Structure formats: C-alpha cells, structure tokens
Image (cartoon, rainbow, N blue to C red; front, side):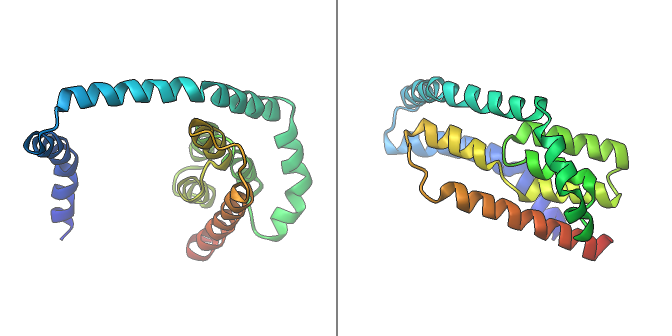
Length: 177
C-alpha cells in the first residue's frame, strides 16, 4: 500500500501540470495567453504586498534585536518549567507567529544542537509543523487583498498558535518524554 502512495505522489505533480493545459486546450482556452495574464496579475500582487512584508520584517527584527524575545523567555521561564516545557523551545514558540523563516532558523538551530531524535528536537519539529505564521498571514495575505479590519482574525490565529503549541508539548512529552 505504501508503494502505491509513493508512486502516486511521484506522478501527481507532473500529471497535474500535463492535464491542466490539455483540459484547457479542449475547453478552448488559449493557454499561453491565460498564463501570461496570470503572471501579470501575480506580479501586481507581489508589488502590492512589498510594503506589508517590509513592515513585518522590520518589526520582527526590532523585536529580536531589542532583546524582547530573550526577556520574554526569561520572564516566562518558571511557568514553562512547571508545565514541562523546555526553555529551549520558548523562542521558537514566540517566533513562529511572526516569521516562518525566523522560526525555521530557530528550529534548525535546536535540531542541530540537541539532535533530531531528542525531546527538544522532536518538540521543535512538531511545533514547526503544527503552528502557523499568524502575523505573516495577516500582514501579507490580508494586505494583498486590501483587508484593513482584521476583526477576530488576530485573536483566533493567536489562540490557534497557543493551542497547537500546548498540544505539541503535551503529545511529545506523552509519546517521547
């Protein structure tokens, strides 16, 4: 059964890339012109989100360079120790909602330092795969379509991040701890 899934996964993307133009051809769509039109729209969206992206990257950099992340980790350390949360994964939990690239760097550093099969490595991997970049989503994606009022999106995104962070800690401690 696993070999079937492996073969399907190997051929899924090439088959999709082949079938879409064939299907469009039979529907009478001018494939090349549609591709060029889509590329132009994509370029416009990329240009439109640049200010949001620069603002978010600057905010993340200021947060890290000012030492706010280290201070927050230090202040919340006793609470995390009581909850069986290693202090080493706290920067990852704090960075993940802001920046996927920054969080990936923190996770890679943890895995390199402690090993991929360590409790911290497994916890970092689980957190990296189960949480999302809430502030990135709000600034870039919402900014690209012109949404100015987030309403409950920020609160729901942060609650989801906290929930998945706690679930990652609980599951990894239960299974591997």
